[in-house]
Length: 186
Image (cartoon, rainbow, N blue to C red; front, side):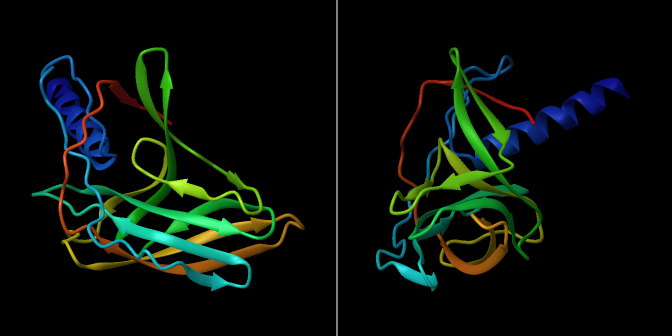
């Protein structure tokens, strides 16, 4: 029973790490690596989704096989101070903001409760940094498919704002390897 639980936990961790697009090393398979997908046709034209808030280059990594998690990426530009405090998507039962960060020689992924955005300083949610994790997917994410995201913001005055965004799943994968080990924790 313990062995089955450990195998299931290890498999789940591998799926989460693969979704973030980082090359990582496992104690049991040191040569295992993942390709980092790049958006083939990410929206190059900024989309103003709300007065003073613009979204650029929104894309989602397509899933492979039985993969149950993936990442979503975009750039947010705002004219006023905001904090990104949550995300939701009908494509996933669980959607969270995450951060990849080096701790010593290990790349770790942690859930982020809040990401502050300063006026005119773009917040880039990207592989290897802050990003959106979509987990317990309701179905596969295929290249070219649109994925709805709902971004939840807190304004400087404490008021809340929710903005719908559509991201396009990437059309291809381009290799980009990182020689860091990765670990996921909350």
